[in-house]
Structures are given as structure tokens and as C-alpha cells.
Amino acid sequence: MNVSEKTVRGDGTNNSATRNRVSVLVVDDDPTIRTIHKALLSSMGMEVEVASDGQQAVNLHQMGASYNLVFMDMDMPVMDGLQATRKLRAMGIKTMIVGVTSRNFGSDIQDFLQAGLNYCIVKPLTIEKVTPLIGEVIRNM
Amino acid sequence: MEVGQMQRRLLDYTKTLLMEGFLDGQFLQLQQLQDESNPGFVVEVVSLFFDDSEKLLNDLTSALDQPSVDFSRVDSHVHQLKGSSSSIDAQRIKNASLAFRNFCEEQNVEACQRCLQQIKQEYYLARNNLETLFRLEQQIVAAGGSIPMLEMGF
Image (cartoon, rainbow over all chains, first blue to last red):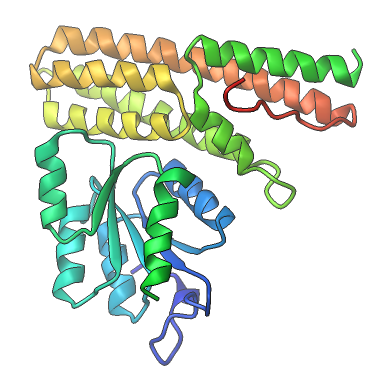
């Protein structure tokens, strides 16, 4: 199990979600996209962790990690974004989960939304796409 | 060549790549993520993309060479290529990938193979262009200058 050790303290709380900083988990199997999205979100002042597939994202939450926002890629090996989102919601995770996809078929996006997403956006992430999401997360913190 | 001239040459070259559709605004956003704490960010990301793409192109070549082509596997690789090329703004690779996916749906092997050849050409073109861009940047830094940023909407 590949779990980021710095994410979870012994008491099960997340040491990434420090006061006033939004903590984000980027879930994507593409290393280029993980690198870009992490840099973009960090430049916006967020604490960013990454996972390379849905299973890792689920494992992190099962180990007690929590985030203010999750960006979930749709197509990933091991466990895709739809399965991971369903599992997280079944675990009672209420975090904002935003699907990120390069697909443009409405039916694919609908299926992804119905898995439990709050929103779905088309890759790549940009400051313009992320800013309103962060605003909503902060208002709800 | 003095630094000012090198900087102008870099800006002109970047504009040319933008106008010819090799790059778009997304690349300029990537450049804006590069700073003193992360000076090699763009080179790192672009190198990751090209290494990954090379593997994908090899996998696609092999997949299309099979006597019985697994189109879902081909489609999955092309989808991945489309996604990552859009993130570094390799527009022409992304557009070629879109056409490729249509032929996958039709299960047209010959058309897929033609698309693959086109994507390979775009890949090598993009690689050469960006390597030239990074060489120009390195020359400027080696001469003690700073990398000028093109404003969006130039």
C-alpha cells in the first residue's frame, strides 16, 4: 500500500489540513498531470497531496487522512474515478469531490456525477476553473 | 549575441510556436508556475510528457500491429495521450488524438495507423520545437540574463 506517511498522524487526523490552508488531494494516473496540477494548486496557496489511482485515494481516507477538496481523474487503472468516488461516499466522506476528465461525452460526465461528485470539469485545471471551487470550500470551512 | 537580442529571439520564437498552433495559452500558464523555488518546472513537466508519450506511442504501434486489434486498449492509450497533451498545451498532438479516437470507434485499423503516423510526426515536431525553446532559454541564463515572459493576448 503506497500511502503518503506525512499525511496521517497517529491519532488519525490529517496534518495537511492546517488552519486557514485548504488541503487538496489530486488523484490522477498521469505523472505529468499530477505534477502540473500540484504546482498550480500549490501556487494558489493550497496544501497538496497526490495519489496515482482511485485505490490510493481510498486507502488514504481509510488511514484517516482528510482533505477539503479532492480532484478525481475519471480514467485510472486499478480503481477508476467513478469507483473511487462511490467508495468514498459510501465511507461517509462529505468532502467536495470534483471530477476531472478529458472526455466530452455528456453521458460519461453524467455517470461520473451520479457516482457522487459535486462538480465535473474538463482537463486541464486552470486558475480560472479552480478559483470558484476554492471559494466555495472556504465558505464552507 | 548580446542578452537583449537573445531575449527578443526567444520571444519571437515563442510567438511563432503559438501562431502555428504548437502552443496555446496553457503553456504560458505553465511558465507562470515556474519561479525561483522551482526554476526547472517547465522543462521537468515537458520532459515527463515526452517520456510518457514515447512509451504510449510504442504501445500504440504494438497494439495496432496485432492480428486482432484490441480497440479498447488502443482507445485507452489515445485517451491518455489526449489528456496529457492538453495539459502541456501540445495542441496539434491533442487534435490528432481526437481524430484517432473517432477511427477507434469505427474500428478502422488502416485509418488508426495513419493517425498514429501523424501523431508521431507531431510528437517529433513538438519535441524539436520545445527543445529549441529550452536551448534558447539556457543560452540566455548562461549569459546572465533572465527569461522574458510573453504576455497572454500579445
